[in-house]
Image (tube, rainbow, N blue to C red; front, side, top):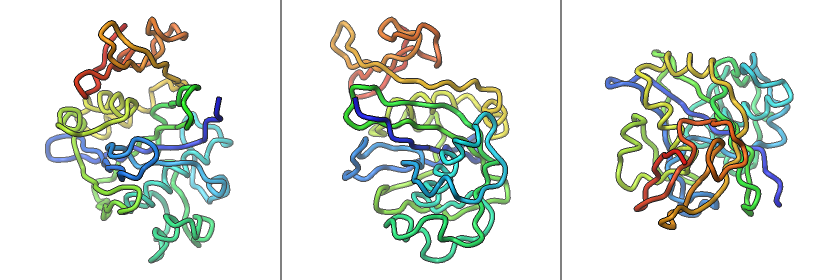
Length: 254
């Protein structure tokens, strides 16, 4: 069993004309994990993330785990160009971070604003997978006067867009990892970012490690807590399994 590497993901929401929209990026074909998939900004936690200057904290996240939230903010800046914190990043900092020639510790005056984040979920890659991640999913909402210039990095991500969760779920050819699929279902029910952020405060977050299986028709199953194929009896999501059928994920109870 390989060790799960610490990682973080962040859902960046805004209020659009037709409801809540969130920022999604498409991974490069060269990505080692879910190439071509549409994802939220995110990546591995770096050692330097534990020492970055921060403001406040994230509800329910102990100080010892602040590096996960810092990583989410850093990855949002690296992959999408949006800085969620105090100070103004210097020209060239984003490229230096993406090429690993610098860390946020090299940027004077930048303070990661943890107060604007909430913890949404916590996913751990199954034990038998060769590449495993222990990932915290955070959520944040842009303020009405906040209009960052979003641009994918053209390295790890090759496309970007603001999209309503329901539209992302319905779109053809919109490849998604199972946790992303489930998160979009969870976010599709909110009319405003304020509703989504309020729901995040109320959520009880526990780690979820799926199990893999097959159904009677040999369709691939991601079994979740509460499913007959999962050892944890208490249900943790809207569905107990996600099934890959005809090239698309489907949420079901089993």
